[in-house]
Length: 172
Image (cartoon, rainbow, N blue to C red; front, side, top):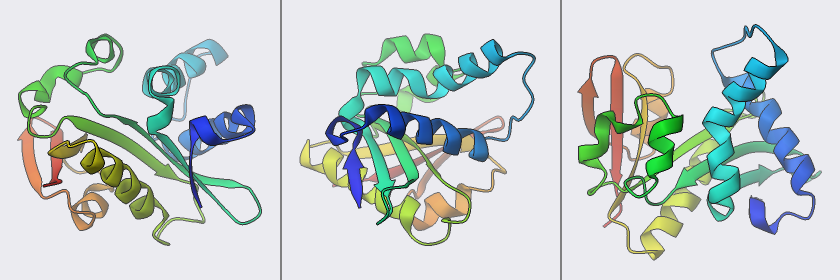
């Protein structure tokens, strides 16, 4: 089942699960302190939870366990404060008009390769399409393991700048 953060009865438990999945999924594992770890997490998730809770989706198993999440923003160009938070946010700003929404998605290990991440992406894409948006995007590393996943999910417009790769999905 896919549920918006804003519709979950126990927001605290959902956010704790999001944090758990985030750190299970990130390549960065070492932090100098608990504060640095918390700051890293806030950098990549805080804005979405605070400013766009209707664009934060959870995949919930039958037993109620959170097994995946998607954080999204439907107006990348308008979210100017994200450019101050997320490193290199502005590198692909010239692509935001055609692909205004962006997302991050992670699935708990053990539940990957079961269509959960794709379902989250497709649900967010449906929302964006219903809002009349022409496309959505994400930015990843050129050699990241997730590139083929996103290509299979319809992100076929690619722009490379240095080690970063912009992948766009048209919604029209």
